[in-house]
Image (cartoon, helix red, strand yellow):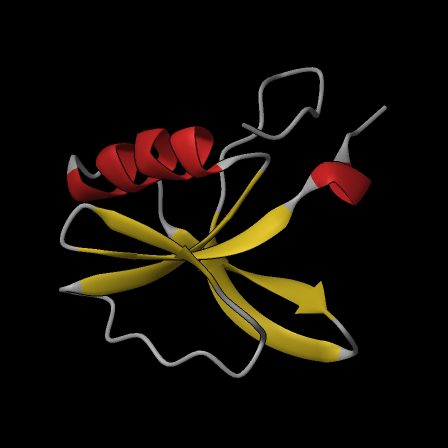
Length: 79
């Protein structure tokens, strides 16, 4: 089971979170795209990315394949 339908796409840039779309640009260093269930979860995912605990992966979003950072627990639930 998964909560994929609850995911939002967020741009995290130097600790600031804002809503994003599949067209939002990011550089992977100072800004990243995060698929998460909330802005708070997006910050947790971005922190894990900064620490090297997770890597960017491809995700289908509005018919486009984009590279985003996500975290799922062992039951398949997204952060």
